[in-house]
Length: 102
Image (cartoon, rainbow, N blue to C red; front, side):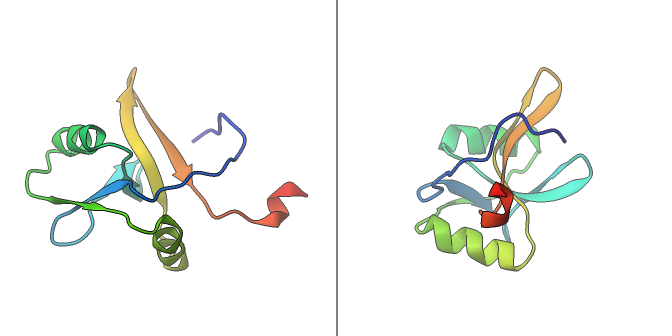
């Protein structure tokens, strides 16, 4: 995995995730991520690509709390994973820490 840009803040309140019997994870480069999406179209396209047929869509009401809860459980989160020219593209969401600036 390579980084293409400097870190910046993203608000995920209002983003969407797919829920089956539990939240649906995607596998990218043999790692497991919880995928969230900025639009319903992107979510549905991803579920179709991964051959997931039965799911409900949940809207994230408080992005900060949502991410903090996942990160506390060491769950990696990606935003809008999609296939582009044979490569999977996504934004990996990580907690902000001051130590990254020094």
